[in-house]
Image 1 (spheres, helix red, strand yellow):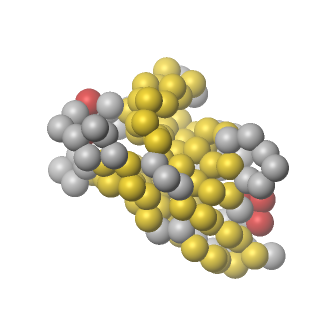
Image 2: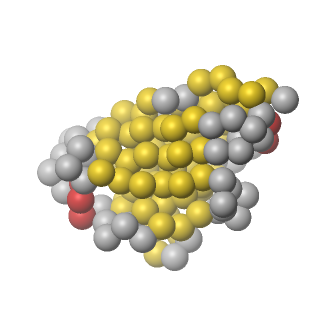
Image 3: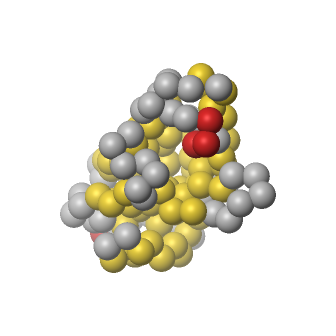
Length: 120
């Protein structure tokens, strides 16, 4: 059974940076798309970024130019480097594994989430 475990969340001031990590179990990590979603209080979960098995990346307009998604297939890990953080980036961030076509990400598996809080 596939398992995704996020880490790296925390409290940061506006303008600061954080790097989230997501460690995945399973032998097919390198063949599957990985992504990040977030959910702020009272809002629906929204897609943030995705990376295909070959390394192609896609971003939501709200984070483009500030966030960078990457993957290390040798470590079965996907990362989300978040720079220039804003208070509106405050949310629980979820790692996901599934399929990506353009900016449409279909998640088959989810992590448990990690809290990111950006103070103004």
